[in-house]
Image (cartoon, rainbow, N blue to C red; front, side):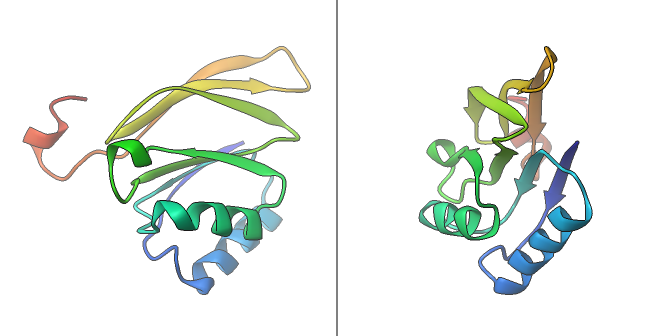
Length: 119
């Protein structure tokens, strides 16, 4: 199952607790987190602490605050990032216990129409 979460303040422990609860109550295998406001150097710490055994990619190379993270459960799926930009991450999802694979694009658009034109 896939979920997206627009969360601010992901540096705060209370948000980490919410994430752990969300994962405990649901069987999500792929999560896209938007506008987390966490620096790139914090991503590794936050994800390893709260989602042991999961992997991730970001669009940090296109935005200092890396507005998008894609995080996946490595026991269930693989995600291969094919392309990213300041407003999206695109890749291939493969479900490990079947032959199902599909393209996945997660978008978090900028605030003005002019800035969204490249999409």
